[in-house]
Image 1 (tube, rainbow, N blue to C red):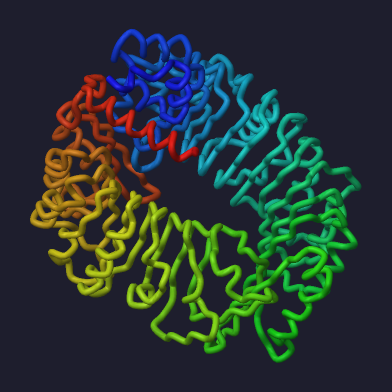
Image 2: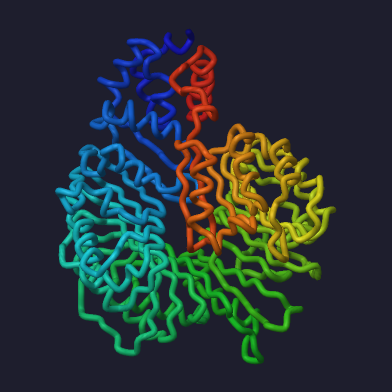
Length: 605
């Protein structure tokens, strides 16, 4: 084969780009040369277990993971709707995190029992080579003692440099219990958590080499807890929504070595003169300053031109070349004004009105491309008022998540035709005619993975005629009252283009038997989450009844979970009939990887 003509050094370099699951499925047991390369030479295997099928996960854990355990440097585990309770299955095969001694990158998503992932004889994370730790939306703590000890375990990791704690339940109240000093952590991200001055002081005290910090500050307390301290921080990204302005000033007084500051706020409404005074006085070494001030309420004392003039001093335009843009809707009664620096430095944008724009930039259209935005939520209405430079002139080339409430408005935007990076689309369908526009969107989104449909009209054949080759996850809700798919609807879904390729499905089902039919007849389905209206097995009234019925009618390889918080039954499907063994490799599979390698090589030139 052409693939085998490549030298070992090049193959090993290219292996770095392939996830461990695909790497082992594609090359292990192909021949002795590839076996030796994988077992003896390739030392950086990364496993991403998010969205993996149950059958493939079982095979990897049963037959392959132990073989490569000393070569695994990265693991990602998720207990979300697509791989429900995967952490428990991981444990059931006898694996614990402490066994992966060479692990450098660990990411856990929606895990509810991280203490079980740690060896029962250890009670602590012993990962001497771990440099990056991400805990995302993990309800991992059962009591205050567990909170405190686990956070201290994290701060004790000897090589940890990057730590992200995002969306973890009530973690802010336990940060004050950190008593272990970490000299290795240099990058700390604590999002969806309100820090006050005391928490900040503790974090800086126990992470003395912290260089970059990203968090949310409350600042609601009037008793400012700040002691004189020397901070190593050079970069701070904060969302500040406190009521006491002195709070944010006291923070700046203690981080005078700061080079990079990004702040998002709905309570600070300083003009250019005020910001200039603060920066010169408290952060004299600042090199890059980015902000967004939202909900800047216009009244008789606020003039947009006058506000922009305050950002036209030599400090802003000549010394730093920092430009500022205002956006507002002059036709709206709420008179909300948003002010931010250019280029736009935030990943989200909410569009609710028909905005006007004005900036201090000499060429108004110079910063029309909002490259940082990945999530765009369109709450606009049908009243269009466009001025010389308006929303229609902007571009969003890197959007990954898009929510559209009113397609009639959205299709007027010139940039919607370019959505090459979109992976998630959430769209509201109020009229059958909207399906035509939705298909146009689907034709423009070659990487779309998740499609969320909120249908507020009669269920029609147009829904089951939609096509997009990349969509693998479907979430369908029909309202305004909850609608449950009938047997006929399920039949249409099974035979629809999107249904044939769907791997993860969330939908409301009328009859229990249709759940079995969907699992048996949707050949690519890996996971399904649903509510059931069946009068005998109705979820809210007979929870155990429904679980028991499903266990009798589905293969024992299916894992069934009840999610009380979402009111859903979740099934992770594991049926031998669903998939062929991934280890029976044919020549065409190697040709596929060779084609992939060529793309990687040429993309680097």
